[in-house]
Length: 265
Image (cartoon, rainbow, N blue to C red):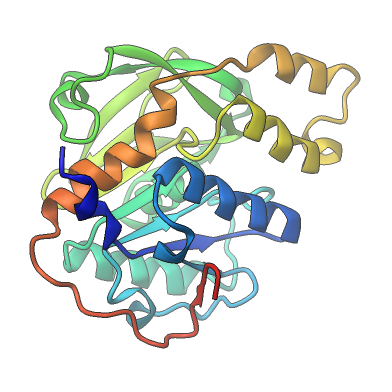
């Protein structure tokens, strides 16, 4: 794994899809925490508020992350949908590291020709075990982890067909395509939340309690369904070290003033 100083210079852009300022801030804090990077290494853009994101806005970053989305569904169209598809296409064409977490995973899959559906019978809310595929066991991101381990999940939609150029890396008992990567580019998606642990998952769920957990006893059931996962807590850091830093031998330019806010700035 690359040395710590190889991570110190990384610049990461998190694209957020958030209506609630409280969750917007919490998501930022969660990604910073589990990355192990300094806050100033992150920049943030909430594309709900500023949907006109363009390929030029993601240039100069070592990696781009697309986060979760609360009540937004990949199966619907929004003002930011078409612009974000263009951004994904550009990142893939440039072989620029891209990671999608939960909604971001679904969006990348659909943008590149896969299919996403709403499937309440296969929804997962809590800590579930995933199992690595043979490709996942040898992938730079996941190699060395146990074949089966727990991750934090909260979704109603799921990827039912991966893009043609994608390779499945992990599946759960309920849902295939829990993680994938493109065969010829450092582009990854994970249905699970690499930025959440049990406590942070509960914090976020409290914000969405009326929408998703209004039924009697639902919050208590979620608390019982969540458990710590040592492996899950390493996933974001592993991606940055094994995929981004390991492939960042060439300079990608400096971050320009593209209307992107910086942490701590």
